[in-house]
Image 1 (tube, rainbow, N blue to C red):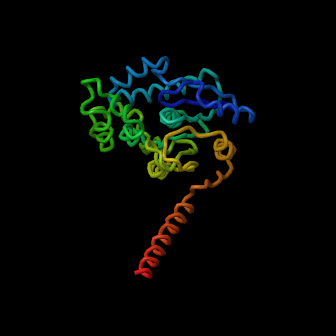
Image 2 (cartoon, one colour):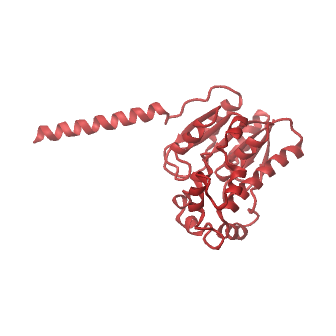
Image 3 (cartoon, one colour):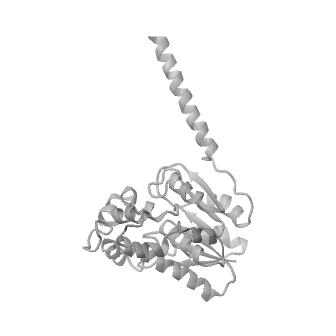
Length: 267
């Protein structure tokens, strides 16, 4: 089985060696896909600084076409896509386009492109200041246009429509989906991941960290959650499941009430 891995923004094909360590022993042939404009740091910085929201949509569109072309060149009848952060959006769009994909795994990626673009400055204030702010074509900036795109009013709606992962026909065509992330990820928080999963017929979300940051998914988590998913077995629960969230909320409420009682008794 072929597994196509797509790295994140600012990453490289050599990112996450854990991918090979986890999946190669199970017979997967791993092919790493280079995200456009990542040949050098100066090229990437220049692209980010002069990109409009429409350019970023085209970036994902072109990346998805590269994924599909790579699979066609390798002549596999079916394949798995796995993408990290920006690479997750590229992998997701490719999976919605190509019926040969059997499984799609998003790492630190919610599946909601507009939501992620509106959160760029929460990922890194410098990135938020840089991205798209050195071009007169931006029409108010990436965040403004991403917000408008949700209601179909962006000046770059045509470009966004190329990659709109929420389109009903694309959701119906999507293969089984697994999202792994951090509950407090500033770019792909739990509520955004679950919002996209609710629209997807066959999806599973596991928040495997609670560190409040945007980071790679480690080897242990890949082994525990992704292998089961690829083998079409039930995906294990995480330590931060819905039940855990309810328990934490209940415990917090109990602590507050006990504190109030103690304060009343002392008074």
